[in-house]
Amino acid sequence: MQKISSDKAERRARHAWYLYDFGNSAYAAVILLAVFSPYFKDVVVGNGVEGTRLWGLAVGIASVLVALMSPVFGTIADFTKSKKKFLFVFTAISVLSTALLFFVRAGDVFTGMLFFILAEIGYRGAQVFYDALLTDVSTPESVGSISGKGWGLGMLGGIAALLVVLAPLQLIGNSIIPYTFLITAFIYMISALPTFLFVKEKNTPEQLQGKNVITVAFHKLAQTFISVRKHKEFVKYAISFLIYNDGIMMLMDFAAIIGGTLFGMKQIQLIIFVILIHISGAIGALLFGKVADKRGSKKAILLSLLILTASVAGLLFIDRTLWFYVIGFVAGFSLSGAQAVSRSMVSQLAPREQAAEFYGFLSVAGRTSTFVGPLVFSTISYRMHNRYVRLGFEELQAEKLGLLWAIGAIIAFLVVGALLLILVRQPGKNGQPRKPR
Image 1 (cartoon, rainbow, N blue to C red):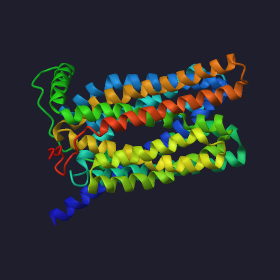
Image 2 (cartoon, rainbow, N blue to C red; image 1 turned 90 degrees about the vertical axis):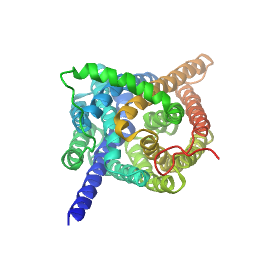
Image 3 (cartoon, one colour; image 1 turned 120 degrees about the vertical axis):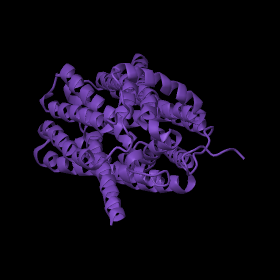
Image 4 (cartoon, rainbow, N blue to C red; image 1 turned 180 degrees about the horizontal axis):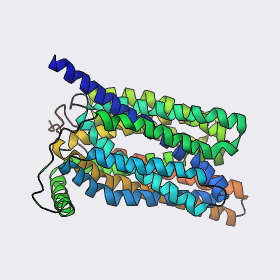
């Protein structure tokens, strides 16, 4: 009877953990991908090239701040058994700041960037602690499939949010856009609640014995860096992740801008496009999660990166919106698979008792890389645009050509990251790297 009750509690905890991804992905779909990014570029800033540059700057600032905070907070979360507390704080910041985007109108560039940066800090900071809870709702044998299911349900959350805002946009028009940010904040908040109610942290908090929590955090962080150095496969994986994740985040952060600029897609078309990406993403997360459990996380990530690189490269050779939808479907399938399996591979390479610390350490690479990515993308796009203008090209054509050069940078990051991943030894069933034969 006790075992049945325990099994029921574990299932409830897993389902609650899945639901957080539902709301988290609603934010990503509406704010990052389909609605706020083109709204910021075309309405708030009102200038295509300058809007792209400022969007990249805002994403980068948020990423750097999260990179600086995550390792220290991750360390504190581990030894005080407070991953959920930090998750709550960052989630609250993101939800509130997302709601405040409602007040951003044409010309409100500073407040638009400020509220978005705060929302991004909350969103990306919360992701560190949410990912770290994966070890509390899974086993080494099930970590891949559970991570994939969470990501798959997250894709459904993105679809649900976009469908909710699609009908009002069609009936009323773009004047309803600010209200979509309030809707997104509400979905994020409601979906996050079950995680705080039903997921239990399994590690035991340490006794501080009168020591200052910040002092202990920095001391343990120093120990973590020393410990990480001993886990060579994790270090190699962190480097490869830093690079290929850069390519992934560049693609996500600028997908709507690429669609709007290269193919002239309007707001409703972009929403339909992102819905399509989320549908294929849900399939990809589930499928690659199963591949990771059966064939190993490394092979699953490499396969997904191969498909993603080929699909992004296709953008250089198409000029019709229909093909953009096709490429988006394939890219969404592989992109979500890569992201879902990447977090399960971290849990396999990191010591269980130091999960949040290692996720925090990886965030230095991952979150800092997401500063480099938008900066590289927006800089290349901006400078190549200016070059083509000086050569006599029309403004729109110069902007399109600049974006194509920036897309080439995405491909380069994906390829280099995949090549470095090949050097990482495959995690085994017990979470330890397999020994070479």
